[in-house]
Length: 149
Image 1 (cartoon, rainbow, N blue to C red):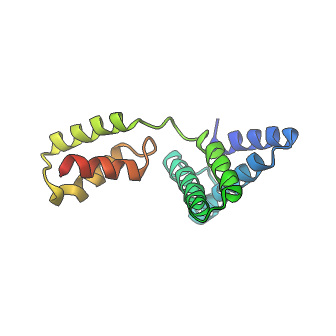
Image 2: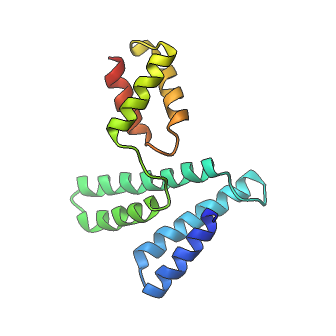
């Protein structure tokens, strides 16, 4: 089932349940998917890798907004952002734990012979490519820094 179909089904369920937070999050995903389709000029569906990147971007935006709201003492505004992030995360593949990310990054470092912070860019490129969609960039970056230093 395509992501758009899943989103539409979830939107129908949210409408019936009168879940405004879920509906708002799902509408944002639908809008972003439509923009991505028209941006590429293709009338076909967006590639799965691009869908995952798009969903990760939407989740990151909401988490960043929530962090800013919490920093400013506005928990009332942060809660809907975090709720929306949780709803969007349901459509992402299962995320790896930090230990699993560390194991994969160690394997990448050993396979390519990387050592030291001079190879951080190369390591990040390889790790991001291999772990795309299954781990966020912040986690990958912290693990790579820790292992190379």
